[in-house]
Length: 138
Image (tube, rainbow, N blue to C red; front, side):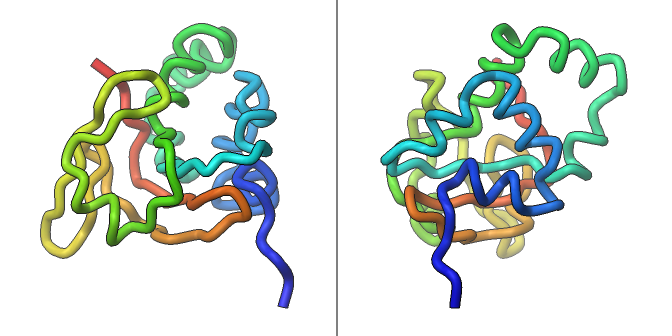
């Protein structure tokens, strides 16, 4: 059995999150998500990123320290939070400093309107939950 990696390492190694890993690196958040934590990241899958209009995704990637950085921080919460824990939180504060709505519908946990499709990926410094959408903070 292999030991889990950090959040940044796990995202980089998992082909379902290649666009998230690329965005995290571009925004400079890979060093944060390689750190001690603990953090919980609700990470959009590659399919979720591909749902964005191509121009929007290109604009975000062209300005990694601006809007992309802001959006990515909205997907990060503090703490080592399993899916069964986050569904009880309702409005936790994100690393961006504002809250996100978490609900449950039809047995699925919904993070800011995006369903958790891949729950509870354990890492050395927290959890990753794969989500089916990129959540844009208001």
